[in-house]
Amino acid sequence: MHVRALIRIPVLLLCLLPLGGCLFRSHSVERKISSATLKEASKEELIEAINREAAKIHTVNATVDISPAVGGSKKGKVTEYQEIRGYILVRKPSMLRMIGLFPIVRNRAFDMVSDGETFKVSIPVKNRFIIGRNDVIHPTGSALENIRPQHIFDALLLREINSNSEVTFLEAGSEQVEDPKTKKKVDEATYEIGVVDRDPDPKIGWYLSRRVIFSREDLLPHRQIVYDKLGNIATDAKYDDFQIYDGVNFPSTIDIWRPQEEYSIILKIVKLNLNQPLENAKFDLPQPAGAEVVRLDLPTGPNGQAPGFNLKSKDKPPAQRPEKKQEKKDSNSPGQ
View 1 (cartoon, rainbow, N blue to C red):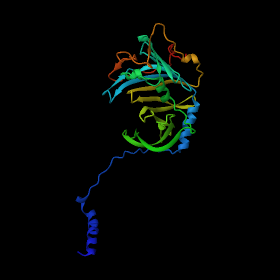
View 2: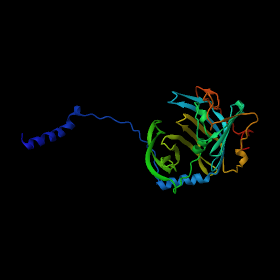
View 3: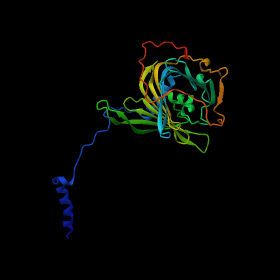
View 4: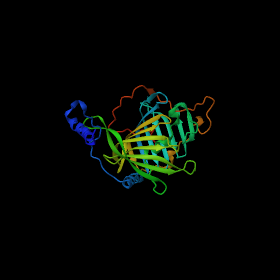
């Protein structure tokens, strides 16, 4: 066949394609991209925003509702616990105290303090006093027994980024949000600030320590993922419903997930005061007379168990009780 004839055949077929409906078909694709107006910022502007807001906070005195849950894919089930009222005190650089109260009677379910390195937990109903280090030396089978005040501290407050010792990078990402019009899940662009730190151990060296994820609708940090030195996710914290408290833009809902221990804690701010003086006595937790002392930085007993919280579990989330218009002062609050 002549060369020109060979060239004409594919050209002719291309011309016939629009005429043959059976040769192709098209279909609509559901739009899954957010139509919200997105804001822009540079890496330097996002880091400056983190450091600016972090520098405003020196102390935290919060009344919170605490919703804990344990379990996940490892256990094959999730157990949710009844929501309880609690109090959180924070004083930088590393002091934290957290109290949980039993529902209705409002007696103390637990009282824990940390100085950043060690912690103490008092469980009055069991007359037990637990002492240990913030890193889990001998993790137990119960996820709630592995809760450490430092986990709460690291998720509650975004740390400032030190450009002299940490390396940062900006990455474009996306997250699923609910479209306000269709109420369906859509993808929305985000900014992610990665923070790389260096461990003194040469076997570890540089490692990704955390990611701070900003919504491009408001340029606020809506999520922080903290990694351990082996690259595993240690804490995944989500922040929602930002409000202005004492001149600081602070989330009123904080959802903390610890995937390795498989427990989560949702904190809902009921009342928040920032930068009030908090003396050392507020973080003092003496050992109750006659309490059984348990050292979690020592080997576990013959049964391999260590005491922990024993909150009453539930199959379904509890119905929310309406908040009283005026918060009654509670003698259990360490802020009083």
